[in-house]
Length: 94
Image 1: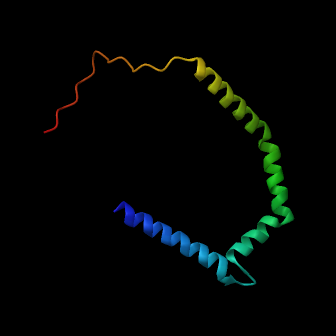
Image 2: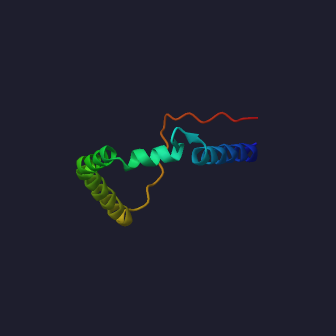
Image 3: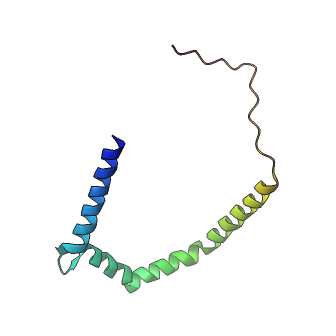
């Protein structure tokens, strides 16, 4: 069942790529339109604005990840949680 699903997904992806690259939609193909939109000045201004406004957040996340990795290298492995006294045992399955 998993193999069939994978082959079907791969076939749909291949069909999308072929159609997007070869079938004209107006003056250009689908991928041509996307490329043209991405190259537009307004899009590049938007991308630059997002990079500029998210810069401090990205830096803070990077510092947090680096600090977490540095702390984890010195830390001991996390032990399993001790079993509670009021915990009920799982029922046995036949």
